[in-house]
Length: 358
Ligand code: GDP
Image 1: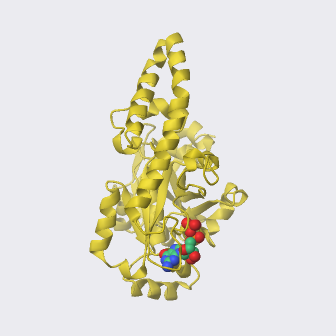
Image 2: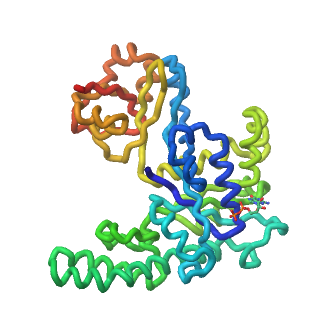
Image 3: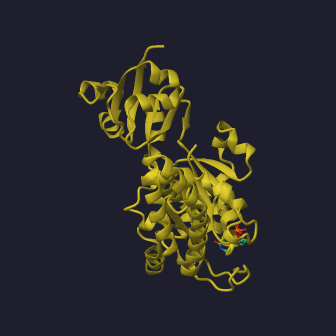
C-alpha cells in the first residue's frame, strides 16, 4: 500500500504527531498490516462527501479512504555515515511513497533541541543533506555495476546516463525531486532513491503562532513549492482525547477551523498523486483509492479483481450533480447519470456502480 514516511530530527514532535494521527482510529482494524507493525498507522482520509452520501442512501456506515503513515525513527545528523541507528532507517524509508518531514518551530525551552538552537531552515538542511548523502552512496555503489551492464546490453545505456546525471546533481547538494526534472528518474526505480520521492512538511509551531500569518509564510517559503502544513502537535494530541464539541471549542480558541491532522492527511494523500471515487448503498458509503489517470476497469479492480476481469460498464454520476439533483432518481431524470465504458478515465468524486460478469 502507499505510505507516507514521517522523518525529522529527534525531539521535533514526530511521536506526538504519529500517536495523535493513529490514536483510536477505527480504520486500523480493517488493515491488518497496520497492527502488526508498531510504526505503521492507517488513518481515514477526511471526506465530508461520505456523510452526505450516507444520508442520501441510508447507509449503515461510512468507510473513508485509507492513508498509511510510517514513523521512521533514526534519521539524525550523520545517519548516512552510520550515526544513531545508522542505515537501519533506510529500509523503512525506501518503501515510503512520499516523505513528510516534521520540523520544529515551537520554542519550549524544556524540550532540548539536538543542535542546541531552534532553526527550521537548518533542520530542513540537515535532513536533506542526510537523504542526499544516502542517495549519493546508493548511486555511487550502483554505478560500476550499471556501467558493466551497459557494455553488455545497449539498452541499459540510458540507465547509466540517468545515474550519472543523478550523481552530479546529488553531489551538488540538490535533491532529485527539486532538481531532477531533466533526469528520467523512473529509469532509476531499482535504486529506490530517497530524494526522488515527493516531499511535504509539517511545521510544529507554538499555539500562539498558529494565527501569525507572516511567521507561517516565512516557514512556507523555506520549502515551497513543496506543501507545508502547520500545527501544534501537543494541541493535536489533546484534541484527539476530547469529545467532539469540546475539541471544536479548543480548536476555535486557537483560531482554526479544522484539526491540523486532517489537513496533513489530505495534503499527504494529494502528494501521493491519488484520488478517490465513491460508492454508496444501504450497507456503506465508501471512498476507494485510485491513481490519477485510472480507467473505469482499473477502478473496479480496487474493489475486487473479478470486477475488473468481468467489467462491462460503469454507471457514473459526479458527486456534485448527485447532490444538486437530490437523489439518484432525480439525477437520472436530469440526464446526469452516464454509462461509461472501459476507456473512461475516472474523476475524483465520481459516484459509481459497476456492471460486471462473474
Ligand atoms: P520526536 O523525538 O520527534 O518523536 O519528538 P516527541 O514527539 O517525542 O516530542 C519531544 C518532546 O517535545 C516531548 O516532550 C513532547 O511533549 C514535546 N512536544 C512535541 N510537540 C510539541 C509542541 O508542539 N509544543 C511543545 N511545547 N512541545 C512539544
